[in-house]
Image 1 (cartoon, rainbow, N blue to C red):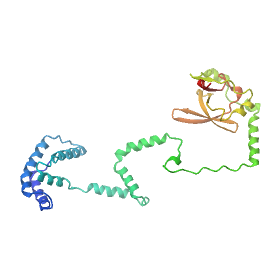
Image 2: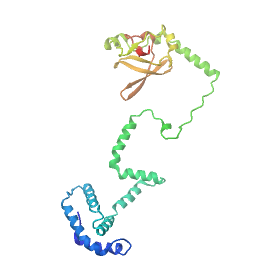
Image 3: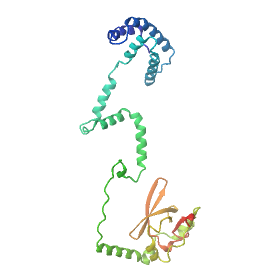
Image 4: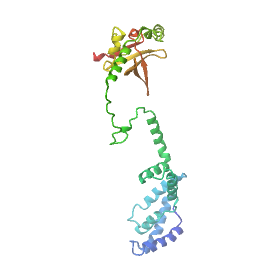
Length: 301
């Protein structure tokens, strides 16, 4: 609230000594006339103002109060000019001292090589923890749900790691790859019969596959398993999806990812979760009453 008149009159003499010496356009005699009138206006305005008990709200109310008091500099210009300069005087060095203390906590013996920009940014965070806390929590929640991180895109103008050049393919590598493909094609009847799922029990438990609206189930893609292994490639799966029968939750849809060691990897998406599972996809188990089927959009026909 406004200070007593005697306090203002005593301090006004000190202000007049500096601002009334001709360096500023302040007339000492006019100040002595205008100051009582200004104090009267301040008291009347203070009686009409609701002063809150909360400290932060009180500071905001005082700033608004004095801003209105010195808004019209045409009326009582000399007294308001002195009041304007009086309000600019810093009565405490607490804010400055807090800044130095915070800098001492931020710039430690292990973190003493920061530039002025980094130091300023870290001090802004520590001095405004309440405002930054919500932003930090939101940032953690955002990045926690991100799985595919791409560091090469983290900074503008950074190309990231250079792509590796293709290694020279030797004749031995070609023969090894051909042998691997031959082993995948020649899957024995014993391996096919080693499927742990009992198809009839699973179908009885979960029922036949229900085709989603707008999709259709493809006919068996191959007559034999060897023929199916030869045609099951990434190009064949373009625009198609796999529906597989699980012993835990029934039928589930997925998309093709890659082929590895006689098995096929598929991607399952449930909400925000992304999982990858391998399947053998024996052609004998194909069908809506079997373990798996392939679907596609009916509009693509």
